Length: 125
Image 1 (tube, rainbow, N blue to C red):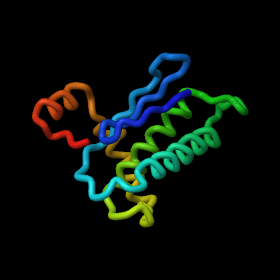
Image 2 (image 1 turned 135 degrees about the vertical axis):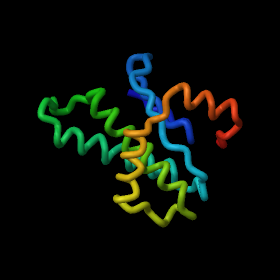
Image 3 (image 1 turned 45 degrees about the vertical axis):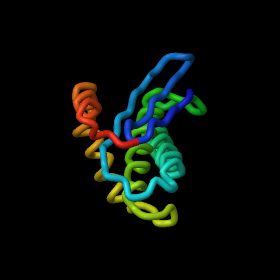
Image 4 (image 1 turned 45 degrees about the horizontal axis):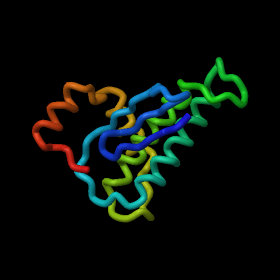
């Protein structure tokens, strides 16, 4: 598995040369991008390991696509929350990340919304 981050667009996961998941994130007005990658990595690990620990159909020592998806959802939520505060030394509260995760899952950006934002110039990378 390879995960490629795309800033405000989210991230994609690839396995055996094929894209297996395209995770969008919420658009926010960033305050400071410092530490966003570290927050993304920590969020991924939390989501992935939590899914593996709670999964009834888990296979020990095997990476599953569903666990990767869960990790990416948490990763995008944590990374997005991290850019909303100044500096890398102020971690986002778990409640803030959970709210962002809910926004991502409920109001997930689809291609039509993304296209409208791109054409209107509302995307800042």
